[in-house]
Length: 80
Image (cartoon, rainbow, N blue to C red; front, side, top):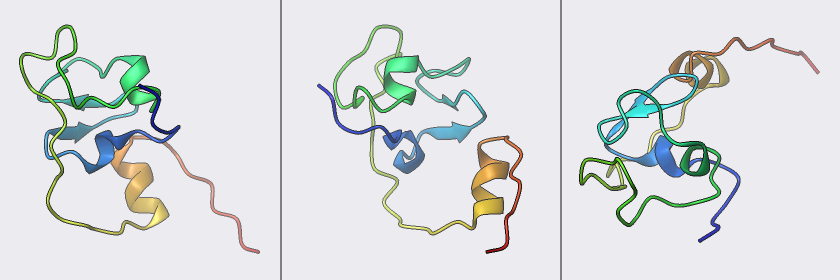
């Protein structure tokens, strides 16, 4: 089922981080369909070791720099 174009993985208690995304269910990389936000991982998915999306339970707001570091990407800041 299509949900959004933003990965809900970032709000999952099993999320570990990384540019391609890793988590307890997918320690090597989160499948593209889930990572791209095309599919929400609220039901079993091949290779997920029985682990599905669970909300982290906390809401935290990250700065752009913190999010870039979490996703292991570089971020060029622009002053407007």
